[in-house]
Image 1 (cartoon, rainbow, N blue to C red):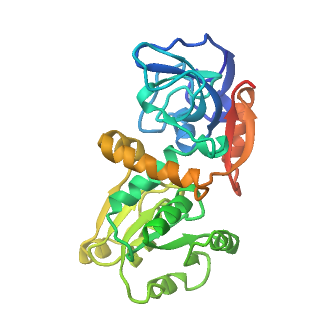
Image 2: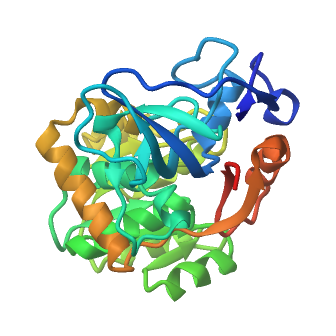
Image 3: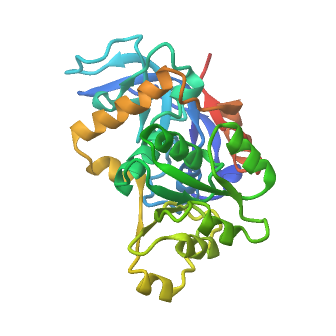
Length: 327
């Protein structure tokens, strides 16, 4: 079969190669999946560069999420059948015609959920929903999130709206403001506009902003801290700026604020089975009824993974870049 392989860590455009490798055989409790679509996530590229929270042994096949069809089952697997369509996340080796996964990782996909949504339904949406759970906010309360026009920001808005939580969304540029407002999310502020921080402080009508989600880091984290209410929490979810958190120490002390991190993969391994099923059910239900749709901008074959990675990091995308297996 064909697979994308890295023999060394480095820039994706330089180290991603398509190679012929043996088709894997499922062991006990495993299934072999014929890959349909697999997205290129930012964390996939970080793994390839060797700068993520773990480094796989080399050579390695990247890819952490996919949708596909069960092709073979190992001993002891009685909850899945050959031919069944499933989505999986938390994988290793998804960028291949076939990959192995634990049967208990699989989430059966309703026919009403298209592959384009199903292939990216678990990692980012589940992380966003777990994050919202961890924020412990109630209906009517306010949160603020930056980089809100990205995948996580849009998902957080969607899930928060379904739960009655108010969201102040921060974006860069009028086009991003318009994009979120067209989706029915608001209020939305352009952080490149004059006086936006003062507007943000007044926009809730005096209601406190109790949680802030930072995906940018750098001075953007300090802006969130300025908007945060006393005894609020600032959660670091990403660092799109590539810079460390820059936060006014006085604001942290005198607001008695809490600053903490969130790593979706780690949280997924920590939650109990009942909570996991509850969150997955919420995500799949929203996808099945059409409320949650994940767009794909470009679809590449495995032997063009290097080119696909470049497109994935090109600014201005309106959907995910994905790889497809043999058709």
